[in-house]
Amino acid sequence: MSAPQQTCDCVWRGVFREVMTKVRQCAEGGYLQPIIMNGSSGAPRYRRSSHVRKREEFAADVYLTAVRTLTDPTELNLFKYHYLYGADWKLCCKRLGLPYQENKHRKLFFDRCYRVEQKLGKVFLELKPFTLWPPDEYFHVVAGRSVDIRPIPIPEARHRNGVPLRPPLGPRPVPVFAPDSFEDVKQEIRAAFAQGQTLAAICNDLNRRGVLPKQASRWHPAGVFRITGPRAPAPAPAVTPVPFDIGDGAAVARHARNGFGAGRSLDFLAAELTRMNVPAPKGNEWRGRDVRNLLLTHPREPGRFKRAA
Image (cartoon, rainbow, N blue to C red; front, side, top):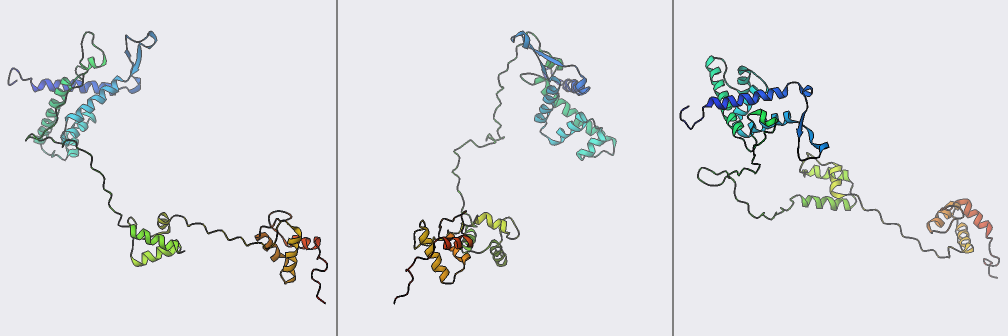
């Protein structure tokens, strides 16, 4: 000890080794270890004890404390390889990229280990509100000891010249949306699609002119379809005005007879009556035999087509 107020480094190393010994004991045995019950005097009788994972929590607290304390990546990796994984000094030097051919390299390696033990041992002892040393007090509540569970104030980190490491919070800037430079190509694709061009024809034209998409080497119909969307349905055909009453059977027969006399077939007349929405005798469509039965059912009116004297 260099001064009466300064604690010897061997004390911190002893604290670290005792904590790591407890970590190894927690890792041995696995599910064969006895269950730890956590008692609570204020709860009802049937809920005064509960199953807790004290061993896993202790090992996790040790690891997280080491990660937060060892800011140097080399020291953190040394802690993992040598103390957690159990690798020897030569294997650790290989993994860390350190020389290991001579005896002096072994001394330098263990000097690094001692520095890691000193740092972590001091943190394990001074950790608040619950310390990791002695480990027995971590697993069993000590009666009569008051623990201050209030959060510990952490001073804001500042640069050596006094400037804060992070700027103060300010108003959030209003997002400005940049115009899409690809919008002209999209409009051209939509216009060509509206004129009736197929997706394959649009792709071939764009690839031939060298107009390539943003995230592909060439255009494909699937990519063009995401821009155009489905084609609008074709307008319904206009309904042909009917020159007779479709509800009058005699008028329908007269129209069919006039067409048949003009040389049209029965199937042609059936399709024409279906297109005019004339009610069919059976079903929704007219057939040739339906037109024939219509002509036979409604004979020609006498004297209507008599030649003039």
